[in-house]
Image (cartoon, rainbow, N blue to C red; front, side):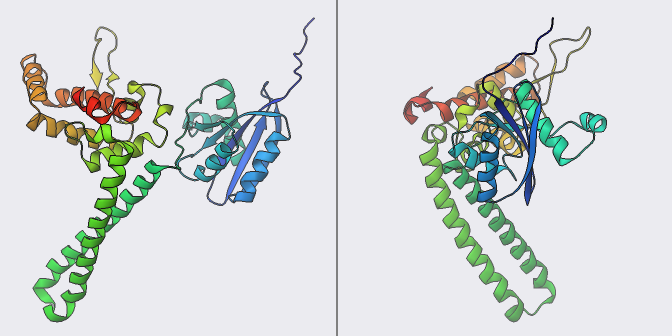
Length: 324
């Protein structure tokens, strides 16, 4: 005779589909049975109501949230502050959506089932410490530099036709103001980056810009990354197998991951290829082995990602990291 297992405590898994104004949640028990659904506003009261609603069903195991780095960032912070486990869930694949349809409730339930099955197990960035401050300042600097470039280009265009004494004065003042803003942001970023990851800045080829980008990519909780291989995958610098049939051992360029982090690794690789003698020796040796320049840079980026991960997660002093 078949019997259904009975549990003394209901273990609750909640999936959340996030949007700008509202979030939709679906709760499942440990057997995958649907317990209920809820729509909340994206406010502090709405987040508290969601947590209370989930706990009313039993012991909450985890929340699976789509968009923890965007619309779900505020909810994720509130839930973590209450001691609840938050799991980052990727958007459902298009093939799955074609089979099951698309709605907020369907996406929320899919998020919960992804956590329940173990398919989704990644920890999101916390976004509540120095790495988040660096991210915000970097965005401010990028927009200021872009505005300054636009003002300079406008002045160059107006030099041909416009009355200089009237038209260019305001643009020149704007450039001066933006120059001062960029300089102030550079000073703030330099101090924050050196404070957040002194061991990373101490590595050859790293400056405020490249180190700041990798700090933002890793987040305020780099320990969420299981290994340097996971960090390399996050940066898009891990090799992708491309072998099949009789052709094995081939790898191709990784086009995924954080492309800004990948660009930072690329800049560090170029600096080392020009000024770092051990790297220059490595390039010479690999060139004699028949490797092309893009292949050598790909290998260098993977090695630099390993160094950066160690610097971001290690508690050793900066001097020891740099020597390594």
